[in-house]
Image 1: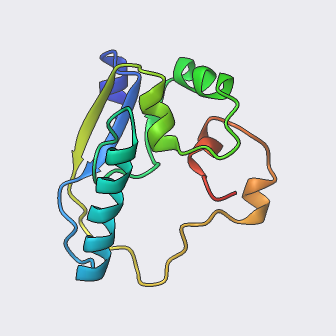
Image 2: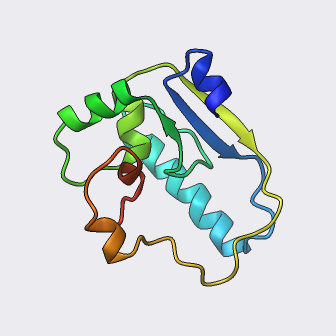
Length: 122
């Protein structure tokens, strides 16, 4: 990711190439969710991406200027319009069942930094 950032990309987004190991229900929900988001959005949101991404400081500054109270990072990084690349990601192992994706209250209370922008559930 850093190599691509050094090449001039301001946003580097890992993109799942496979949803292997996920239930059919999860796959259907993910497909329907991205379909709905892209139908409503004025900017394309790449499928099978998460909020984890490398974001250049200039991009973070532009996102903060938007003053969004309910930030949808996948959409906000697209809206500000910087040079973006998708990095194909092949997961080597599935996340353990019931593993939380919610940041702990202590992490949320620690302050707003560039890395905390990816914690959308604080």
